[in-house]
Length: 266
Image (cartoon, rainbow, N blue to C red; front, top):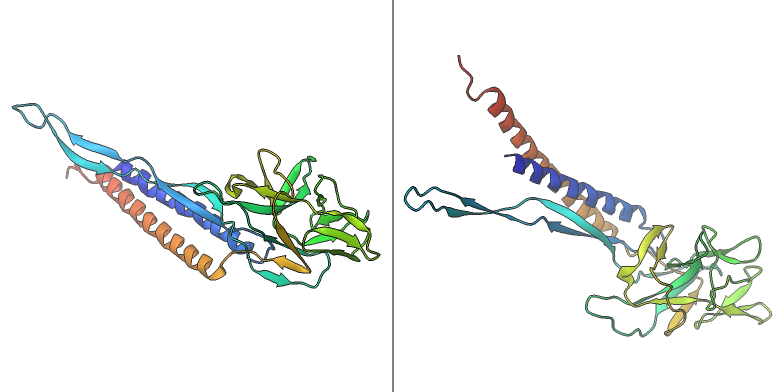
């Protein structure tokens, strides 16, 4: 009976974690470049039950069957499908379109990213091209992280009167070259780690400008969260949570009777 309690509690915890993930997805449905997380739910290894010494002649038993020991949410993996493009009209907004990328290994998803400088000075990667110009004239993210060029250096644009062509070359209003925006290539985007503020971290620095891409100025890539599907998934998670809760309550009532009523005299 106690194993039933543990299994129901594990199911409740799994759905609570899934609900928190879905809530975060829904909260970022309007965040440019955001990639929705997907839950990987697994079951714990099953136990094989066997009755022992039930045959008084041979002393042998027999197999009863398997017993599930509950579920758990193994991980939340981002869905790196490109979001739709929205025209913003702002010169500091860039949308990144993947070019022809080599096919990765089975299950691997190659993808391109803007390169920015993290707080610790090492590169971070993002699909959010909603940038701004700092007081010092640098091209930065809305959180103030410098956008890097192909050589890994901050890009100095001075003001918002600049142009960027489809190949990523930035020029000022007078046509002077201000640099080439750094676009990093991840052979398998699933290996990147989310850090918040739309930034991703890689174990090793990713190569820059290694493959073809296109930049659309005055456009931003929208979040790829499907709000309707996410709401439906949240309702499903809540119903599953409540079902496990009822199972837990049933076991609790059975234990209560076993402790307080069974075997009572008079």
